[in-house]
Amino acid sequence: MFFVIAIPNEKNQNVTEDSTQLSVTRNKIMTAQYECYQKITQDPIHSKEGPYCNRTWDGWLCWNDVAAGTVSVQRCPDYFQDFNPSEKVTKICDQNGNWFRHPESNRTWTNYTQCNLRTHEKVKTALNLYYLAIIGHGLSIASLLISLGIFFYFKSLSCQRITLHKNLFFSFVCNSIVTIIWLAAVANNQQLVATNPVSCKVYQFIYLYLMGCNYFWMLCEGIYLHTLIVVAVFAEKQHLMWYYLLGWGFPLIPACIHAIARSLYFNDNCWISSETHLLYIIHGPICAALVSRRDKSTPERSPFDSCTPAPREAQAASTGERQQSTHRSEDTMVSRSKYVDFSYIIHIAEVV
Image (cartoon, rainbow, N blue to C red; front, side, top):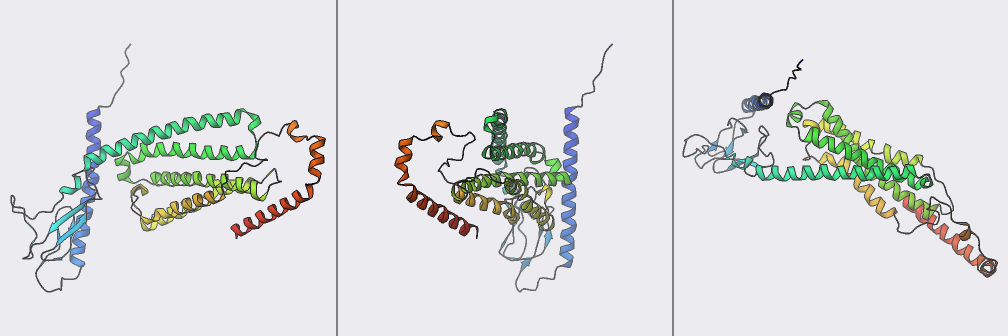
């Protein structure tokens, strides 16, 4: 008995992908052509004196009326994969008010040569960065999972500080996993970006949310140490609910605001473009969290910042040491109370 397994032909699959890409490109060009002709018929007639070049459609881009002797500039279209939209397209209007004609074909000509001039080098650099990001996030996931395993295995490490570490490490794991999937399934899939499904925008929302969680859990670490050392010197326990709200809850606010603003004002395919100021909605709070964490963190180590109790030998003092410390007890308590009060006042001032 023989089993026959149908294996798809790689050549046919490539032909299908090329046909799909060609269809998307054709639709983009036809849409741009229709919008251009609408603009040509609806815009007011050129009223300035002197010769000028008429508005026109060159087959890929729409050009407005320009004065004679000027060079009109636009960004490269995104019709083709080897075109870089950040490069420039130029069209020359000569002194007589005629569009430049190429000497070989004697036809009006637009300079698109810059659109794919350095595409090969940029693609090579992008691929190197792509593989570096995949490898880096993979190593990060492996090391973080080992750290989390150690934290959960050793029960002696169970304390509030380690709980914050667990949440911070878990946020890094989630962000690295989502980043790898995003790079492999969305950023590296031109066909998916061209079709622009809602799922890729939802995935971009999750990616930006988890990126914010990373930095706000760093802020939680700084606030915890600052509160432990400066404010609550004699308090061994803190309420972690506020840290959970700040680390996991607050990043939802800028992520939701960015999603709404992006859908209204810059609704590009899969929200993958970085050429918009709306990204400051995400990066602004992240920068504020980093600055706040720098102010809150301190290199000192609190005597209560330990998951294990101090040994009995360190807790007990000899009778001679107690007698010697009796004379200094009042001064010590006064100075300590002043220090605590002063630190508390500073903390209140910072909060206000």
